[in-house]
View 1 (cartoon, rainbow, N blue to C red):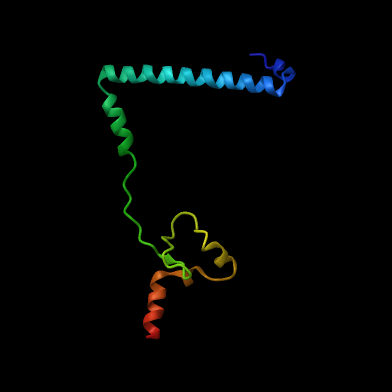
View 2: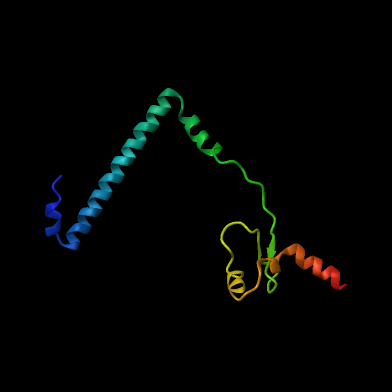
Length: 113
């Protein structure tokens, strides 16, 4: 395919061309998908294909919270994934992650009583 003529097109013309290509591609993909699903149905594997996709991911057990926001005890974090918004500024100000441990907070309360 000769792409040299694309340089002579305006942005609007290129955008229209892009939309037409995207629409044609989407249509062809739908036709291809329907064709493949029909073939699976004919050989009796339609239910197998959808069932296999669901079993791939193993179930993970629930994770208990490990850290608690001292200003709002309802906000907790398990220590997995992204750090919550309430924790980031406190760590930047010099506090240690261990300061927010749930077990440590309850242990300190027991020592003061």
